[in-house]
Length: 221
Image 1: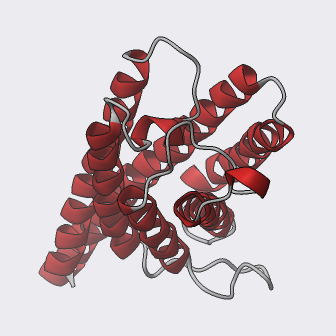
Image 2: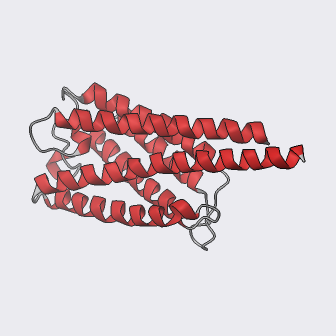
């Protein structure tokens, strides 16, 4: 089991690095745009940052899958959260981000309602919303999974933060009011969510390496 733990630790670290790179690219792209805009608009059809943003999402997907694999044995104890695992929730989030990367919103990322409805915007918006929801669910599952006290409280705090911040930002977008503030909230929620995934990947790698070292000592005895 020791080689397997070391392999999973390496994959977890690699996943964290990919996710961190994705976050850096998203922030880099955002800083090149002089106007206020929602994160998804960075990848909108016709935007100069579209291809860069798409690459960032694909890096996020790849890194998220690696971290999901590394935490595949975690399961929450609470009655509702124990159905499914954090790994499954992360995999679902990654699948939705993969869809969002390949089906960007149209120019301006209008809400897919009324006269602004298009199947492209509807698909992108649905994928993005489900991805955020799945990621928040994974955070809650990790928060109530035994064996990782170091990240339990952090996961719970970040899950609540992402849920509230993203929810308020989405509501402002839906109401079409104070979009500038809403776009900043979405960027903060994205940063917190991706940052959580980086932390989970690193902490999980440290735990796996520690377990591998302990197993080696026991075997040697």
